[in-house]
Length: 91
Figure 1 (cartoon, rainbow, N blue to C red):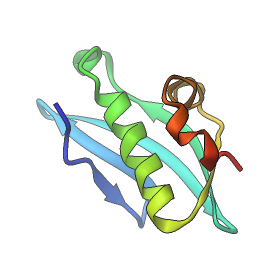
Figure 2: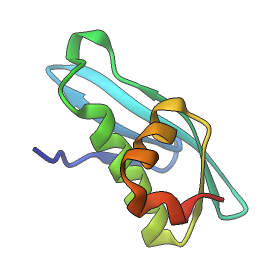
Figure 3: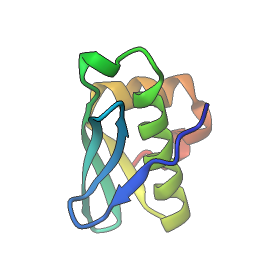
Figure 4: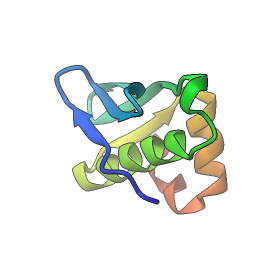
């Protein structure tokens, strides 16, 4: 299942609320590089693929915008290794 993840540009994060629980992927954008700093999915909604959907939304947005990606978050770094189609984004 793919979620319609929201891009909160003002707060530089991607968001998804499931069962009233907010999950986020935080980043910093500087000089055309998206440094992904944190992916947080509370335990109450863990194991549902939310982190993967957040990562995919962020990486797809980076590609659409022509941004490089610095995966400082260990989850996103692992996600990119599992999905090599995103490795060309690494800055």
